Length: 287
Image (cartoon, rainbow, N blue to C red):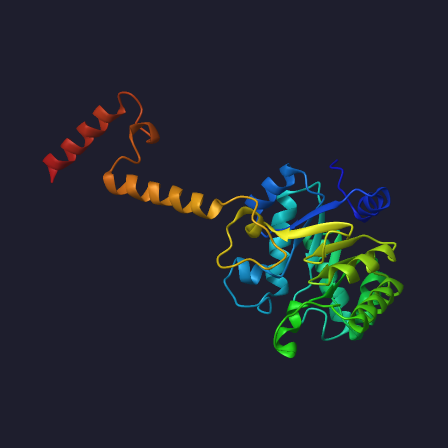
C-alpha cells in the first residue's frame, strides 16, 4: 500500500521547522516528474484554465474539468499530498453544493485537501466542508476568482489595517475548521505574522520566505510560461527554448526525409514480403 503524505505530515514539517515544498501542476506527465523530484505537495489549481487552456483568468474552470485533472495528477503521483482547487461557482451557490463538489474531489480524484478561496462570507463554507470530514486549505490574500469584482489584482496586507484584517480572517478560518492556509500575494511582514501566530501549515504563493512552505506553478519553474513572470516567481531552467529547438529539429528532419529512418520502422516478417508480392501479382493478372 502506498504511503501518502497528508495534512499531519505537513503539520509535522511546520513543527520541526522544515520548509514544505509544493508545486501547482495539472497533467499526468508533469505530475509524474514532479513526484519523482520529491516535492511534498501538489496543488491542482484552477489556474489550469489559464495555463492549459489559454483563458485570461481562472473563471472558466469547471468542476468536471478540475476533477478530471486532479484524478490524472493522483494517478501520476500516488505518494504526494494532493490538494484540489474549488473553481468559481462550485461553492458560492449553497453550502450543500460546496460540500457535494468538495466531496467529488475526494471520491473521484482521491484528493486529500480541498482549497477554497475565502473572504468573510465564506466562513460557513469552510465550516460545512470541514464538518463533512474533509481537510480544508483556506486561500487568502490575492483571490483570482474575485477579479471581476475587484477590477484588478494587487498585493494584500500592505498596510497595518489590511494586515490586521487578514490576520483576523485567517483566525476565523481556523475556527471554522481550516487545517491549512495558502497566502497569495501578501506582504511579507503580514505573512510572517500570520505564520507565527497560526498553528497550522501556511503556504506562500508570493508572500515571502517566512511562511512554512512555498508554491509555484510548474510552467514558471521550468521556464515554459509566456510573457513576464509575476514579481514573486522564478525560472529555474529555460525549457521554453529547449522545447522550441527540439520541435524545430524534428520538423526539419521530417522535411529532409531523414526521420524516420529504417531503424524506426516496423517490417514484414522474413519471407512474407515475397508471398505478398506474389498475391498482388496474381490479383493484377486476374483483373
